[in-house]
Length: 566
Ligand code: NA7
Image (cartoon, rainbow, N blue to C red; front, side):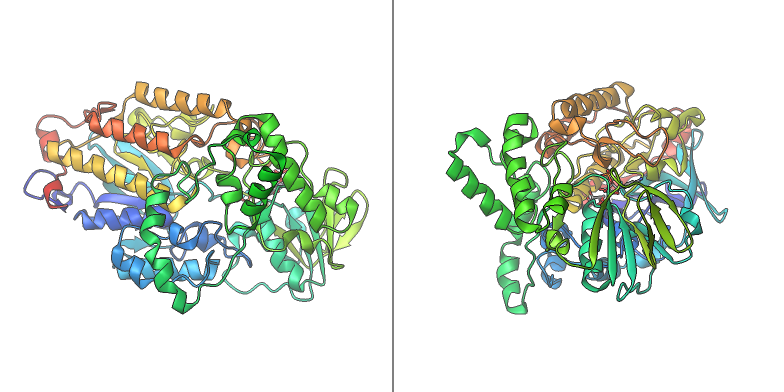
C-alpha cells in the first residue's frame, strides 16, 4: 500500500508537516507507526518517554512481568520477526520486553520516525484544513492530516492523597514511574502501598531481600499462580511450531488471550469433577484460571461463589497465620470480577518473618513523615515507599491532552459523564482522529487487540484512499449505539457492581470515585463481528464530509493510498 501522490493531497503541499502523527510508542503505537510507514505516509511518532515500549518503558519495577504467554503478546504481523525472536521464558519479564520493543523498532527502521521526550499537550482540529494542529510541552507545533492517539489505558499514575506524602525524604517510587536505574531493596525497610496485579509482582520481589517489608492492603485480591518456566534454546522450534495455532486462537477468542471460557456451567459437574477441573486450571501456566473458567461465573452469583470458595481455600492452605490469611481473603466480591493478579509464591511471602501485612481498613495510614509511615497504631520507619496504587485509567491519558474537535469542542467535556466512542477508536465530532485501544475498545491480551485496532484504522484509510475521501468522522448515532451496547452489556455482568479500575473507580481522584463504563468488557468475538459488519456495509456509520474544506479544497486534500498495492 503506497501513498499515491499523483492523486490528490500530500504533505508536500505545505499545509501539513506530516500525513499522520502517532502519539505514543507503546505496543499499539509502534505497530501503528509501522503500518503508516509501510503505507507510504509521512509519519511521525511523538513519545513522552526517552524510549519505546509505553507501559513497559514506564513500569520497569523489579518483578514486572507478562501475564500473557510471551508469544501471544508479541506481534503477529511479521513472520520474520516471529522466527527471529526467541522468548526466554513463558511469561517474559520487563527487561526482555524492553529489548523486544527496541529490536522491533530497529528491525523495521522506525526509530528515525520517533521523537522522544516529547509530551503532547494540545491537539486541535482545524476545520478549514481537515487536519490537526499539535502543541508539545516544549512549545513546538506540528500539523498533520491524521492524528492517532496510542496513549495507552494504563498511563497516568494515581497516587493516594496521604498527608505528608511529599515530605518523605527516603526513596519514593511509583511502579509506573520507576526510575531508570537500579533501586535495591536489599537490607532496606520497604513499604508497598497497593496489592493489585502490579503490587503483587513488586511485593514478591521486595520480600526476597528487604530487611523489613510492610504491605499496605485495602482490598484483597484472588491471586492465582503464574506457573512460569524458562524456555530453553532447544525447545524454541517446538514452541514456534505452535505459534500459528496460538495466533489464530488470540484472533478468535473472546478476550484476545489464547483461552476461551469453558461453555459448561459450574453446576454441570459433580463436586469431584469440578474440583479436579479447578485444580487443573490452578496448576496450568497463565491466566486460564480466569479466562478459561466456567462461563457462568461472570454472570451468576451462585456459580461464581463456588469458584470464589475454591480460591479462598487455596489462600488458607498457603498462608500459615490464620489472621493474615483472613486479611488476604476476598469476601466482598466474587472471583474474576476484578483483574486476577498472577503470582509466584506471593501468598508464601506472608509466611516470612520480614513481611508484615497491614490492612488499611483496620489500621489506616494517617500521615507520612520524612522518615516513616504513621498508622493509627504505630510509626513505621522506612527507607523506601513504593506506590503500586494504579492509574487514572483509560481516560486519564486523554484528559491530560487538550484535545478539541469541531468548533473547539473538548474531548474531556464530551466524556464528562463517561466516555462515548465508536468501537473505542472514533469519537464523533473529532474527524481524522483515531484511538488505538481507546475508551470502550475491546482489550484483554493487549497486543492482538491493538493489532486489530490498527488494522481496522488502516482498512478505513484504505477505503478513504480508494474513494478519494479526505476526512472521516463517526456519526453521532453510531457512537451512541456502540456506547449503549457497551454500557448495557457491562450492566449484565457481575463485574459491573465491583469497584476497580476496570469499572472506572479511581478513589484518588475527585469526580472519578464512582462507577463508569470505560472499556468494552463483552466478548471480543462480538466486537470483531461488529467491526466486520461496519466494514462490509461500506462504513455507513461514518460521515466523510467533515465540514471545512470542500470542493476544490477537498480535491486537493485527498490523501490517497493505493490499496491495490498493499
Ligand atoms: P490496580 O489494579 O488499580 O491496583 C491499585 C492498588 O492500589 C489496589 O490494591 C488499590 O486498592 C490500591 N490503592 C489505590 N489507592 C489507594 C489508597 N488511596 N490507599 C490504599 N490503597 C490504594 O493497579 P495495578 O497497577 O496493580 O494494576 C493495573 C493493571 O496494570 C492491571 O490490571 C494489569 O492489567 C496491569 P483497592 O483495590 O482499590 O482497594
